[in-house]
Amino acid sequence: MGKLDGKVAVITGGSSGLALAGAKLFVDEGAHVFISGRRQEALDEAVKLIGRNVTAVQADSANLDDLDRLFDAVRREKGVVDVLWASAGTGEERKLGEITEQHFDAMFGLNARGTLFTVQKALPLFNDGGSIFMTGSIASVKGFPSWSVYAASKAVLHAYARVWLSELKDRRIRVNVLTPGQIATPIQEQLFDEETKAQFESLIPRGKMGRPEEIATVALFLASDDSTYVNGMELIVDGGTTAV
Ligand SMILES: NC(=O)c1ccc[n+]([C@@H]2O[C@H](COP(=O)([O-])OP(=O)(O)OC[C@H]3O[C@@H](n4cnc5c(N)ncnc54)[C@H](OP(=O)(O)O)[C@@H]3O)[C@@H](O)[C@H]2O)c1
Image (cartoon, rainbow, N blue to C red; front, top):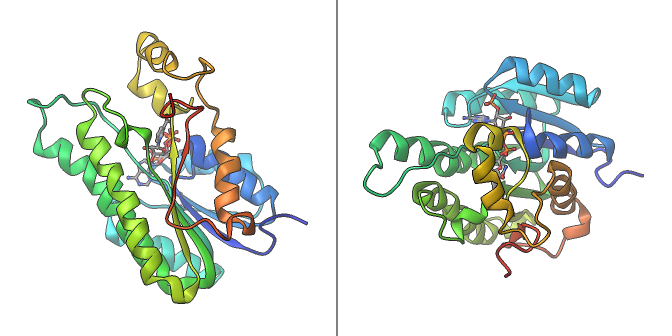
């Protein structure tokens, strides 16, 4: 018996990194998973890696027409959603004094606006008793220099969760935020040199970044009936970085 037998899950940004590890685990636990991302090549590779019970839809989560296409595909193929993990997100450093409109719009356009419309567009398909969670970041609760706009664009997610769980309580849909600390994923390679990675690792009690699989198991907890009494929470998974 898998923990997600017969469930339909949608994972945005599921073609790479921590969400890809989650997609693989969800399928291993019995779900059919829809993954989205902008790059078709990455989606094709992810489908190959996951191997079965997965549908990839090329869609930019910052683009509302693309989100319509994503949920049209889910409607056509499965008709319902039980689990939504809105994980597509973007990050970029920019010091106060150097922040541009483009930077602000890119961070908020995907992390705050895109996430909101992802959830809203999924709702008509949602089964009662479902689980929604969004990927936050510990940047929103720490004061990492140069990350103010990213931090703010992730901080909104917990506010969404608190309000939406009240709005969705009659449908028994839970809404949470999964908030990772530093995780060794491809985005880390793009954003940070070895020195910066070492600086971040020095803040982690075990001295080593998390692995995508260590987020995937927590995502499975939030997606499954193991967490039926967990609602409106920001679940921080950071090896203790924010605790010390
Ligand atoms: N890694 C960390 O240390 C860390 C820490 C805290 C929070 N996070 C958050 O975790 C999430 C995943 O990050 P990751 O580290 O796993 O990064 P990753 O390996 O780069 O994966 C990002 C995924 O999101 C997709 N994506 C990016 N922009 C998108 C868009 N506009 N529309 C749809 N999909 C999009 C990417 O595919 P395409 O590029 O093809 O679109 C890819 O599948 C993000 O929300 C990030 O902010 C990561």
